[in-house]
Length: 421
Image (cartoon, rainbow, N blue to C red):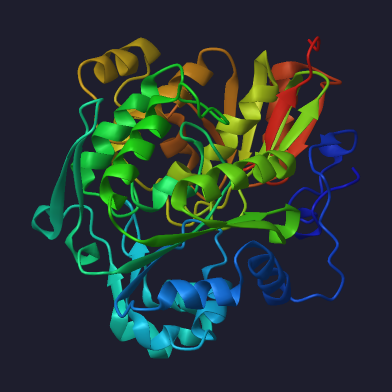
């Protein structure tokens, strides 16, 4: 099996995968160049230190908004760069960790996010808490009826610097950009209403136009940013997490420019659908089943009806967000689960709906650390090693199946070529 990411060779060393196709562009070769050097060159091309210094004139209360550890954004590289800019370190009043609805990061995670500047910045860190209603300020209601409440700690800044990365997302179309604010710094109820639109047909991987989740996020971000000065740094990483592009500007234009670069990196054509698709959730997306299932959402695009979807993810923190798992395991009848969703949306229900829908046309196998008896209740078969999982997949499909391996399944999107079966 050629072309596999070297970091995953040991995990995928299975006789069953000897003839598998591998969906990857290969690891980008930057030689001995440091990621910080690549980032610095791209920033200078897009905006430049002089441009940043110009924007800092008259600004004394800068807020930096960073992703938490659930995203692969190389925030530490950006902070290295920003902290080297004359006058900026003293102007940064707060570094906001945009957790969305995730659990707050532990100290070790914060150290990874802030890198060598952890000691200097730890007393200026604000960790967003989506469930603290009093900690959020109202910003009106979007056209779709989403009540907007954003973190109160954002209120005093005279310049915002948003740092994000852009990859495909299974219902928002793409990560990055507007997601720094919604769900990043939004009240839980705001995010819950926005994510309820994920049950719409238009909410899917790569889709922006006509996607109600994305369009609602854009409107919400625009309402928050009205009259506020800001700079947006949007990073695109290729295979191996090498920075391949960078866009700097306002939150909206930089995001859309980064999306075009992300399509080149993450969307890969396939000529056919496969009997078995093995999709791997790489760190940090393999922490929980809730996060890792994004690899299933992408992988299923190349899966035949009646085929087998194999998810490979450590899931060292278990199933993650409990709401979706409680719903998924409430009944062995898919229709009962879907009926419950129809009775009223709760954050996390979209994840359960997509798994139930897939289970009606294919088998789902998970290679992870979660007990198989737990997984059985969630429409999945569980195994602790790939060989036993593949043996089971062959029992379902029969001998000589077509197999596709996706080494970075949470962000790689297989695109079926026109006219393919």
